[in-house]
Length: 270
Image (cartoon, rainbow, N blue to C red):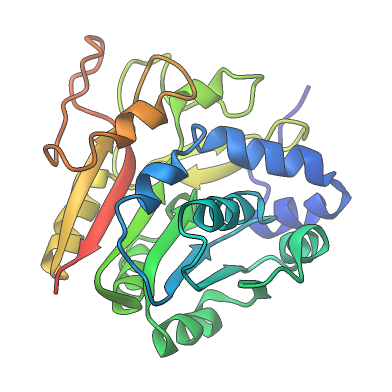
């Protein structure tokens, strides 16, 4: 089988118009390591209104889970969740699946047009799942990160979820994360990505968490680098219990010489 490693992001995501919602949403959920939403919401004491934005929300699978979780844990707290994505096909799928629910909205806008929506009404929580990897230039990464920080309330938080190697071998969802070479990717290095259920591959980009941590610190934020787990795809539940522990937890896999991080948690200082 041949692979189109040069397939553009736009062409790839436009092809999702023909994908089923069950495939795309299950993939999105599985690749977040069964993200422990409850652990995050439990740390927030917001009682007036909780504002959340899902940056690069894809087809809304994770967004709707955050809605359900918040309704369960904080049923009396007013909630507003904004999901936005630059790809029209994925937003159309999100609206078809979940549109019309109270407190939930999906918007198709380029990032430059979506950021004013964030800045006009700052947020408590932001989630960005596999977003930074799609950006080809580090200056654009820095610009995006600065704009997101500006859209946070004081003590607001951003969670950047990154690709997990366990997912690479789980039904062939992702591949070629340099695992066979037993070395981490370098800053700005490209790697190939293929979603399960599709025969196309494209290139994504790796941005070192340590470099991003230095950048966010200079922006007046506190950064927690949460390590990858090598035990099971759902091990993120245990990892997120360490959120309030040390900001750096060394990876114990002996083949690696430096720690690898699954989540970048950014807290905007008051």
